[in-house]
Image (cartoon, rainbow, N blue to C red; front, side):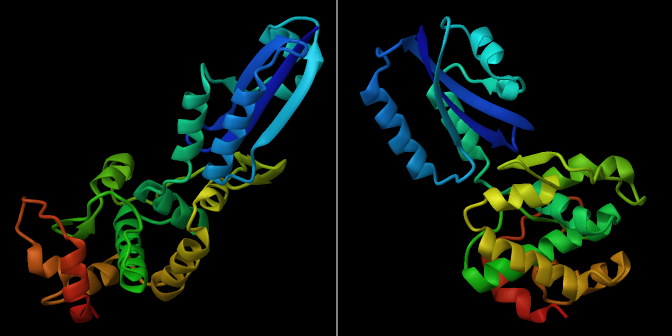
Length: 247
């Protein structure tokens, strides 16, 4: 008989469940290594990680699947470091995550979406003096833009962006929209989500043109750096010092 030690977590980054698998003849698993792994899991602070231990006829993953079909859709990582990196990556928020959150609330145009992302970033920065996401915000002709979001959604042009709202994320066997499930994994979600909802409540009913007008305010952050075709960065310092000029 072989003993199996398996860790499973839902991965937003991979779009599936991921796992780490250790096995050895019964009674031969390295307990020191397991304790070290458990200590590292505590540091990650994910509350959706499942830990499983049982015995089967042999050491193969196939025997695990035969023992319990629960593990059928799990992508097994080659080592714990790979598993750890994937799980940690879910704790980092990107501008595209913010975009998907707004799109889960309401389908909108790419132009309006970019403005909502910028306004949420500004609101978060001014309140907490922290970046909402690591990507740069730059000055395009029609206002502040995150280029990574632009590349992802530019195919829609001026049309409304289509999204799939079907549940895709599983957290402790609860099916959630992908955007909401994503936010629940972020370390600062209790700070982030209220800011996003406040932003949408304040600006969600405005048209894209109205939001462009708002971000084009004289002496505002965009106006202070804009140079045609140069995509100048709107830095945190610029936002903080010039936000008061935006309507």
